[in-house]
Length: 324
Image (tube, rainbow, N blue to C red; front, side):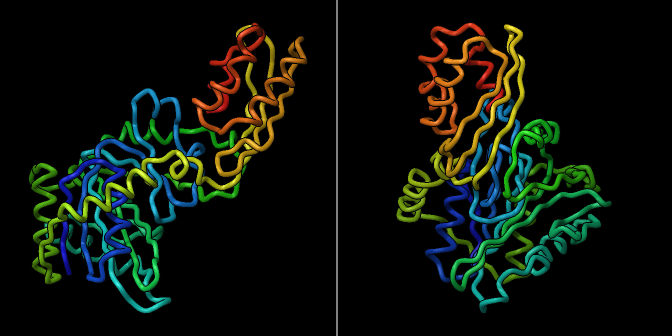
């Protein structure tokens, strides 16, 4: 097995690296990385319905879609990400217990009583420290998971606080769990870098690993994957399953509105507005403008600019707050 320790903290690049290693290598791999603050959504999730869009935007937190399914997770420098990539027989590739066992055994080796949970996670004293997911490509499987070491749990909560009544869809929904940090259960204080070093040495010793460093040619392909896929709005938001958004708002002018959008692949297919506003022509004009837009803030601002330039019953900012 090869062990690779990422020197990058860019979530776009590390997730692209996972795909690159899965699809371009034949050896078994253990990949460790830490991302800067970011939100990672599952492949089959509606990204907008999983996040607190206002908080995420104001704090400039990237939202990145990964290859695997499952729920949304929060990454920051206090969270470690591990990834096993192996080959095997069809029908036997996905095995959560198999790939979490090395992590559980390592934690036990440093006197932390961790165990595999019932939701494909790792727990300490009933609290979650690791969520896991898998993705199969031909005869290869990528299994990856988080390890909350000393994560900012307050930011995690804020980033993932959304309005579940706002969206109607068939996307995979995240299941929120009570979480804890590994650091709080250590017998002796240590920094995250020390913990990563200990984990990597444990894997090297017990699983016969050779170190491998990604080279210039590797990064040429990875960087191309970042720009053509992982950094794009089309992948991170537009890939979301078809959904309906419904929101009721009261404008500063006192008028009431119910906005209903039907969205597919990021495109607004239908927009309906019900309101007691006096200017019905503006309502129709706004519906038309929205149907020409993506469900993306800059696109909506551009397409609806003319509508709001001569309408005082509803402000563009009020609509934007409702739609995001």
